[in-house]
Length: 370
Image 1: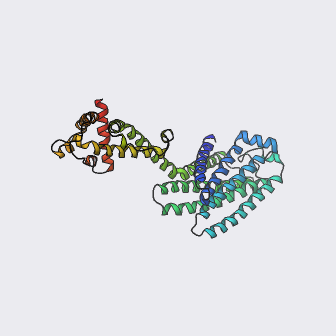
Image 2 (image 1 turned 135 degrees about the vertical axis):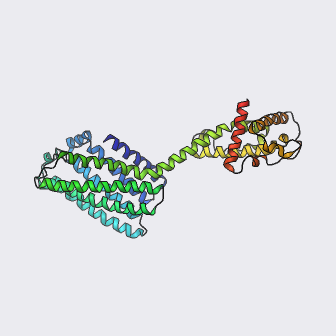
Image 3 (image 1 turned 135 degrees about the horizontal axis):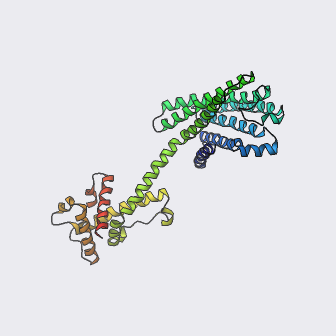
């Protein structure tokens, strides 16, 4: 239960972050409310939370709250698909009709729970006396609605998964499988309620297997709805780490060129302390350093060239690093440029990425020679 709650809370935190950035996004708001109700229902279902609620409000209150929250969970899940429909007005009308249905079911199971002594709810689903009609209706009614709502969500999710491409389709298929498994588990529980209402025993291993299927499918559901966003964040983190590492590796080359041509150093867009760790700041500093290195190489190129201007283009990084040090010393001594500047940095690579690799290679050579 703790692992399940942790997964739901992590997914909820991620959706709350997205909702803060897009507060008027109806489908996103529905998913967030879905996860909120699901996450809120599990502390109530845990032994400590359930006993605390029952001690204050009487036996059965925790189960009633949990089931109402689960009904709202699947309702908001349906709202996500309804608000995502092409016909927004029709989707909103359908959402209002579904709100009436879920409200009626919640009211019905509340009346059923309040019409029997609270003591009958003291046990769990596996030990409850389903021969009591109100108790059977309480569990069976909630189970049937959950089966209906989850089945509809499974059908819509599968349709979207077929229309989508990776990586979005992967997350949607995970979600579809989870919803289908939850619908099957709820349907089996409804059948179990009917069988036990007829005073027929159901093997305990079967009920335990259904409970495990529910837990596993909910975890898979949480993973599915966060898959695309998590994958994008992982890719963003990898890019952040690479840019931060390359920024540090370019430091020897940049320092040499910045000392020779301080006017090439661009002003930062924000204080360095703020840019140091923020993703946007790290990327900005990385690209700014590349530009400053390229400009500096163009300015210093007259000091690097031999009589044959093309001679420097074919040398390796170690030799170029040595020439850069000698050129920097000459600039420090005030020696005027012997010839015009040439776009040396353009010759370091056939594209931007290879250009950056060449710049890093020269910078590494400068560090090794230091």
